[in-house]
Image (cartoon, rainbow, N blue to C red):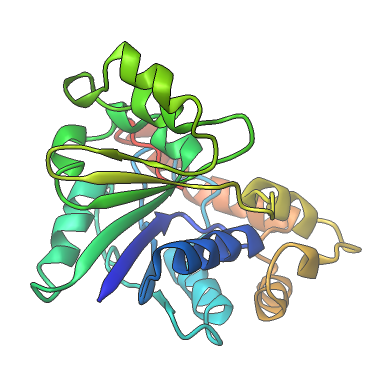
Length: 246
């Protein structure tokens, strides 16, 4: 079975996330995409982040009619920050020997890979699918690799011609570039829209997710203020070791 792990805060999950997953399924013939919401991502402060159970509920609603999309509790219940290498290794222990694992990630996050915990080791654990955006090429993927794995200048020059496809073969990993996804949506944009009474959230998120956001008033000005107030002590003691995972 070909499986992709798609991790992030999903605060909230939106149509851009789903389109990216669909594009990866089509291109790489994936059998499953596991949407893994982080309990506490190392790169983001706790204040303002919706509770895990809300973000997981929205994922469950968004993927309810998608046979190949599965919301995952892989990082549920964690007391500290979630690091990608730990999550990947935890997942691999649950897979069959014949399963093939991919890490699905946007290019903005991948460009900071060298700042993640144990990036070289992480790149040896599974293949990567990097979703690109206009203006980026496979050379940008190559330049983002840890120095020990980075292609030569000559190789990077050749990779610049590959704008929407191609791959980089490493000793124990292959990194694939996935062409630009059509839906250009950010979770920040959705949250800002959700705070307006007249917002048409269905432009950004599946209908059931829009209903859930409205019923729970997740992104109202009052809810955001209360969330920041409740989480203030956590912010003061937050482990700021940086890892960027969408």
